Image: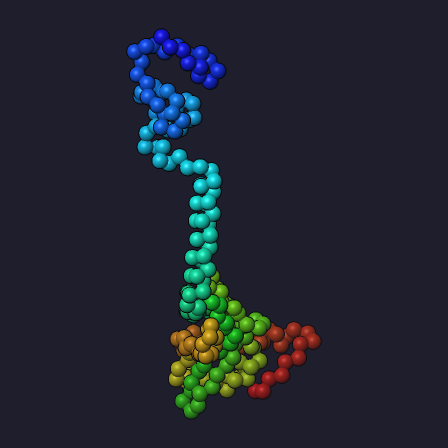
Length: 220
């Protein structure tokens, strides 16, 4: 029987025990051992995955740098554009609701919405206010716009208008997309809905006139 020290403990081995040499440290180990108890290296297929810490660190660094490089090249070569869809959702009293979505990768701008109506004798338009300033439409970010008519302007433009005079009504939206000429998008608006908006506007104006110290100049 032979004796061997394993992790500080003296171990006796049988004379008939089959041994083999570790493929890394060349110390004697059991013939069926999957891992060397001297150097902890694997003896089967896993030995091929036994990378040094330095090599592993280099591989991780290489992958990280390659990922950043690919992202940088992709951002440079990617087409820059904005693709904006505007939908008229409906109205509640004198407030018009719009849903806007930009499928591109650059922002777009909406800075004016107006109601257009055509009569039998001439075409006239009424501008609706978009709160203040402009609306930026960011990529992949749904936007809801609530627009209300400018009461006095709408009244002055429609006070002598009868529903029988109307031929057609529509909504136009001024849109500025990335590196494109300014464009007008036309959205459908029924005559019946236009009449409801007009009626709500006149009611709101009548309420505003009854407020104290509120001077409103009307043309008709």
